[in-house]
Length: 273
Image 1 (cartoon, helix red, strand yellow):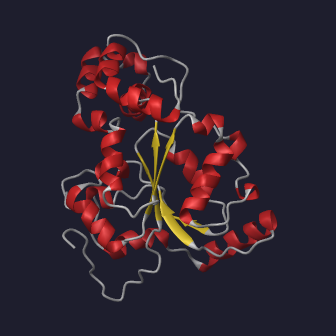
Image 2 (image 1 turned 135 degrees about the vertical axis):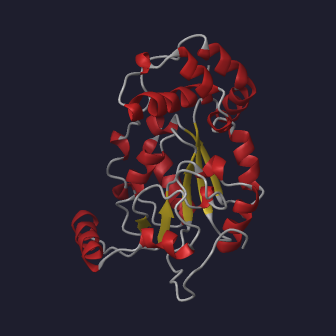
């Protein structure tokens, strides 16, 4: 492999992830993570986002910590106490023991951030990997991303963000890339085995949350039962705010993503405007 390293040859690789909730950012990956985490056959990473595969080979990336596979796999380890707690909860909730069958993580920058040689490394490591990508109206996705990065994380309201900051933000190549879903689809389809990529619209989190989660269960190979999704019908992604995108950025983003929106509208019967 070009980027993945292994400092300890005795590293236990039995907990390599079977699936990724790959994002992109601001498309409901946190909600999906919480829908999956209580299933008795699923073990998810702690924390939700590890930023491993998408920062491989880029030591200057602010979120890069290590290229060592052992470091990455530590995020899937569970103490005896943690396993006992999960087992007790599964028996109480579902009358089933906790028996993890698959492992997964939900780094939301993976969809757009893993490509080229990074993707080649990943596929050599996990040839039968399953991947979930959620596509959201790219204009609203970009606006939600801006509100997070420029407002919430900086402890201010979006009204306090200057026009210059917003201009610079929406010209950022990474921010724009996160809304070009067809490019992501082409990249992942070219790498994954047939049937291992699931793409669904963000709208389904509102319209059919239970069915969406059960589709993911079937993809990753665990028991797809409604009782394992106790929160699905209460699900709501709180990042979908009611306030619209102001001008002139609304018109600019619509122009950037016009072809993208038309494609996904036709594919899924949506009404992204």
